[in-house]
Image (cartoon, rainbow, N blue to C red):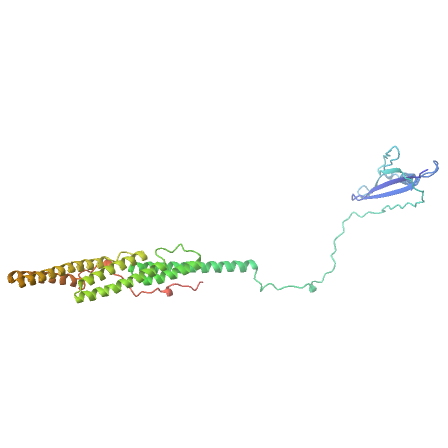
Length: 355
């Protein structure tokens, strides 16, 4: 017949709430008259409680503290019976009977019941620690990464601001040169403005023609000056037709220069001279015609007619000379057509020290 085992669990609750559980397992006795170990433990606990003196009859100091230990015993067998006591100290015992197909073996139960509890907290005492052996790092000379980054960003912003200011200054000088008609100096200033704006990452301050367009304008101005010199030479030679052609070249190149530079019109004086030279050419042609007619009348023996035509030829030639000379004596001067030259961009006016 298979042996039966009994298991009892004893739970002990200390005043501080700590619980201690004890589990006892024993093979049930073969004789029904013999008490099991579980029964003996429960009976011993209750008997020891009954032997306690009546505390109510003793003269005790009511102000003193009392320590109570509670036992809860729950006995569960085949009927799961629960035993309760009315004593101040209660017991809870549980007895569980299990059936196993194993050979009975003698077990010596071990009962561990704490005899005292100290509910007072224990102060934490740290181990001795010698800080002299803890390595230390001197961070006084190390600048925080965040500070270094901020400094670099601030330096970059400062440089960009300085470059933007330089671009504005150079653009202002370029505008002044354009207004003065000095397109070569304007091209130099505008190039400096564009370079500074590139470094600043901002071209909002740039306006008007760019450096390439201003350079083309300066080249056209040089061409206009060249044809103006030719115009004066032809006029001095009396070759008014060639002078007029040169005057037309002056107008064309001056107009192109103003267009590329987005500048004001500087062609008025050149147009006046071209007009004078055109009339001079016309008068000179009239003079030649009258002179040719005078020769014909002279060959025919009509000397009176020849004399009249010769006189008219002289008058037209004089008018032609007068008109041509007016292009060189300042009679065609126009203030709006005057331009300056020889200027240069003053880079020293821009302070780059902050960058």
